[in-house]
Image (tube, helix red, strand yellow):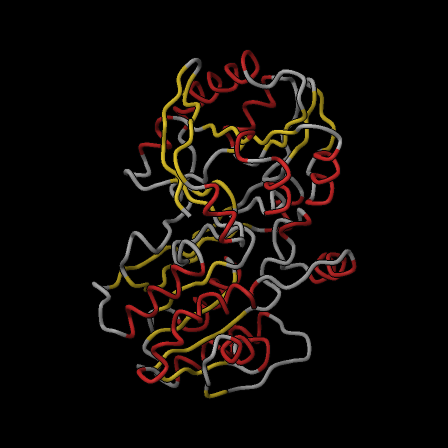
Length: 369
């Protein structure tokens, strides 16, 4: 079995700094100056470690250095290295790497990155070979990603063992980061990639909020204002449901950002990880979060500012989950998900949680890592 590996080493670096992505070179440089570190390499290693026991049954092709070779060796694999890269990698390197893998006839292409990386892969190879994304970006709205790195490794191992049930077309979605930072969401369907079929291990595409849910969101918002918020400090995550909460307070919600409120007032708009840690140190803070529609992720998709250190400081008992009943029903019984990058924390967040679904109405729903 011949597997290809491509890692976008800069994917996800902007998440904790509220950059909404990693496409802009200037913003990425600013994030590095503030101490941003690579995310994708370690997540790729986490996935590849599950393939190490099958090293005798597969051949792995990797792009040089930090674009795959280094991660494969760190996971205990010995890849055949193809291609060459620039000193500072660019989307052109990703596209060249994907083409090189397809030309060599890989049976499955593993890539670590986010939605931008998925678009590069799509534009390079289309549906010529099956792919599987290791989630390492900020947004990851596309349906080509495993639910976490461990799931990616497990599914790749099943592929090597011939245990995959089949393949399907999966949406490749991306949001224009420049427009997003300017306050406008412009999501676009770029096309489809072929991925292995395994609903338990592969996420779905992010779905849009239905217009009919607005009244339900307002009911949830009124419940929080009446019974939950009080005068505590709250970190309010992204989403249209959380936006309704701030609108009920007469506040403007940061688009796809995390806002800090206290006693009905805005304290910090579009906070990054360090701002949240500082706000949490000033006293007991809570988190209000809503799952990503169609995917069910509470943490790890588009809200990496709510990082493992922030979640540990706040504590599980002070996390408030809100979602309309339509959004919960759309999960089809699949659990809510967490993917913080800290497996131990993900495990501690798992179990059952109360979800506020309407004014004076809660349900109990399962969270799985």
